[in-house]
Each structure stands twice: as structure tokens, then as C-alpha cells.
Length: 174
Image (cartoon, rainbow, N blue to C red):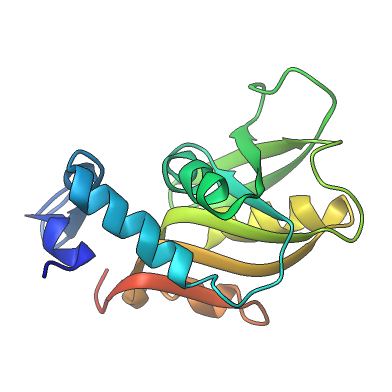
């Protein structure tokens, strides 16, 4: 029986020499691989009490929306600045080479709601740290953050210390 990591394509020396790029397109384009990925992520949440799933643009949508559907939960979009049509709250954060800003609708999370954040990858943890700030600013409680993959060498889990973080696949390097 195949595992999710069997569907991940590894591309050496991309985007630069010495880096192994972990490509999820081969997971989601294969019906069995995609189902397996969603089922494995669902297993990470099987005994957790929560109300909503939030996904970070854009690959968090790919995994978060079907996961929310499969678990009978609502799904909240965390988007790049300027993409949401109603009143929002936003937060700026640093990237490896610059900065970014993400936002969420003000009415998407109710005070006291328990939220799971879903994304495809945890690397440095900056995007998810910003997403946590957004959810908490609306009175939500982040009860877990889950990922398809973790690049442990980039220490994103350390940046999210104090939060329950889990991944289906963990790669030791960067």
C-alpha cells in the first residue's frame, strides 16, 4: 500500500543548488494520492474538538476545503491583502526575502470558536504565525495547525512553540 510520501515528487537543486523541492502537484493530481493526503490529515484531527478550519492562501485551500467538507466543518479563507471583498483584519509578517500581508474577514471567526489551521507545508512558520495572530485577534482559539509536509530543518515548529503542530510527512532537511 502506498504512503503519501510516495506521491511527492522531489526535485533536486530547485530553486537553488543544494535544495530539494518537495512538489505536491503529483499528490493532488493523482486521485488516490489526493484522497490519501486528505484522509491522513483527517486522522491528525480525529479526536480533536474544533469548530472551523482555516486555510492559508493558496495551497491551504487545496487541503483545507476538502478536509472541512469531509469533517462537516466550515472553512475560512486567509488571503493575501486586497483579495477579500468585505471588512477585514490584516497582519504583516516577514518572509525570507521581504515581507507579506495576509487578511481575514472580520466576521469569519466568532469569539470562542476553536480553529484548526491547514496548509500544505510548514517551513519557517512565518505565514502560520501570522494566521494565528489574525484568528486570535478575532477571539478565536487556534487548537491545532496541520500540514501535509514539514521541512524540519527550517525550524518552523519552534516558531510556533506553544501550539499543537502536526504534519503527515516530515523531511529532516530544508
